[in-house]
Image (cartoon, rainbow over all chains, first blue to last red; front, side, top):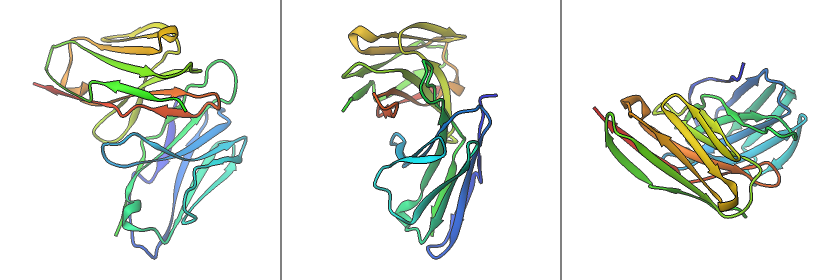
Length: 114
Length: 108
């Protein structure tokens, strides 16, 4: 099973709403990632969790709050977003260390902030 | 940091044609992946290919690590091959560094 599952697939939220994006993998990967992708651009790294601990935060605004409850789950909590935060949000996972570090991506959540 | 360049940026082909996409990178890398992003946004793993040659059906890829480039070959193109093809390499921290992508349109 090389699947990363993201929910929801689509989300429309107002600027005062609080919502969460969810990501799940069962490949035993110990690194999990959140990416943001705008139209016609490659994905941009937001956060990296290694062994359930936040290891990289790419200067992401505090209105985005990641959480890794266990090695299989990754959440992204959203609060007071701006219209420019509308984008495709991608979750990924990969093994840590070793020879093969292939990353696998979920199908993404298309977020619209109104 | 490592720079990744993909060419061409856009490619329009008729169904049945063959194509070659190129990825150049500026430094030695731990791995290299090719992805296809379909019109719905899904990033599909095509190849994990830090070096050598791999084939999967109509697709094949070659990475020459010593010369810092990788090629993705698509033969007998189908309309479902349309989308954006990304090359991504891992730096020393195993973070993915992305190329800008090649947008491929296959016309019926």
